Length: 348
Ligand code: TLP
Image (cartoon, rainbow, N blue to C red; front, side, top):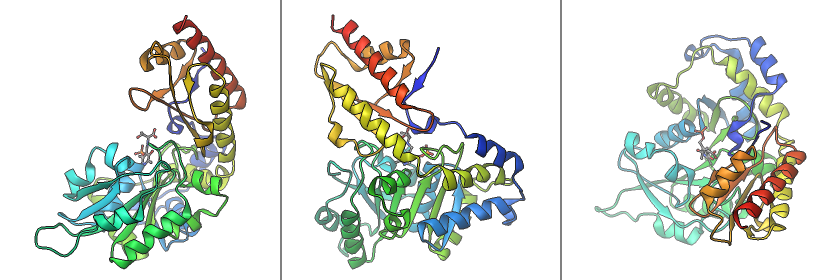
């Protein structure tokens, strides 16, 4: 059956150019620093993000973990949004493995953090308190619906952090979607934080990999922690080669994913009982639910699966549809027809 997979942009397959680059990749042992393709990828990423150095990691989860472990010691505190991917979906790794303490503050609707709330959350010097070491931001914000955190908001958090001698890390798993939506170079977003983790394996369609970028001294320490976590890879040029193609060729086309998401949201808004706000769609995600209690998330999910449309629930009341490379405008039209059919059948 023809399948339209809207579960995530992580489901993308490598392009022809990536497969060719992987086949031809020049490799070496990267633990010895001898893989020329990994080195090229790291240098390319650092330059693109406007930082001194970069480190290739297995996944976004590992990249964020390495960054947080490098910033913080045991007992240090990290401030982040209550809906941060790092807080909700990364298995609590930084607490389990790094002994750091997470302090959440509310996320605003666009995924940003209120600078005043962040400043209030920073600990004063007191024998009872853990020291605040880091603030984590996320852009685009996954759980808030692929929203773009405005640059002014990032700048305000940066100045709060500087005033208190605290560092800022960005979970930029989809930072290129934010850059395309804002129409700014990705380095402009990165200029508001000390370190960034970004993923090659989401909208950029590479099969594996994330990068952590930051100051050279930071990345040197991060490299040792990556080794400790078992993330020192050997002939990793095979996957880094796809990552280079992702960064060189796959950024601008993210605008197509954003247009498709918008088209999906506008189409869904035309269907009775669907609750969706197309105005909230800023990048490649659409969150939607139903006003009719007969349209439960499991029943709609099952109905759509039978129509060849795969989609994940965000919670008990909402779906998250994600557009990506391989999903065409035609697929969006087919999806809308499928939703219409399922809604009509379930609400009959
Ligand atoms: N997000 C995945 C799932 O884990 C939910 C998805 O389908 O969206 N930061 C952000 C903002 C992410 O969305 C993700 C993955 C990660 C980090 C972790 O990346 P990976 O999956 O490479 O470990």
